[in-house]
Length: 113
Length: 110
Image 1: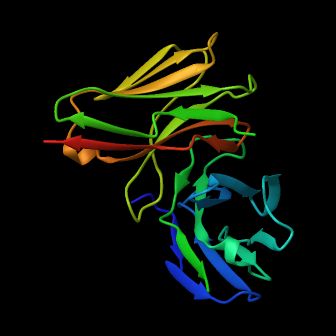
Image 2: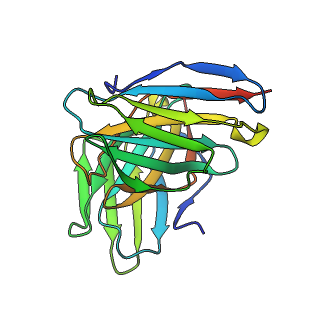
């Protein structure tokens, strides 16, 4: 158990809808990262927050946004969903702002019908 | 543009054998090289990691070999066990952003 909690485990929705994925980092970790895993793109970094502030941005679409709250949990919001957004979304956390030793949750599987 | 190339895509090894997975990178700014193990339905789990000032790191049956001049690094799993059957990802990091390889599906047979 990595200590990173993601909810929900599975999400099924339709095109054009909006969903929110939630992540609670390991106790004491200040950084939260979001990744997307798909068969064609592999594991792709989306965005990082450190202690409530956006720290780094990767291949995140404009339809996607994230935030980190004062209690350090994070939410990833996906809107105007398309079939191609179907993927596994992982959250990871680390203690420091620039830390490659990231610990992953078990992900949210998003299916767009 | 794929910055971390991983091979092979899949690997079958007999129990007790050595599993070897290779990765190559392009960006010389990378300063941290972790390996992750992923089982079906689970998230990637940090297995072992190395920094470029070290040529080898060993933890139990897992060893990373690192060649800075060739910009290559590899994972060796000694005495491979059926429980090691999983997908392995190499990664490279600069600051905090992890760039992953495409993964190697390892199957250890009896």
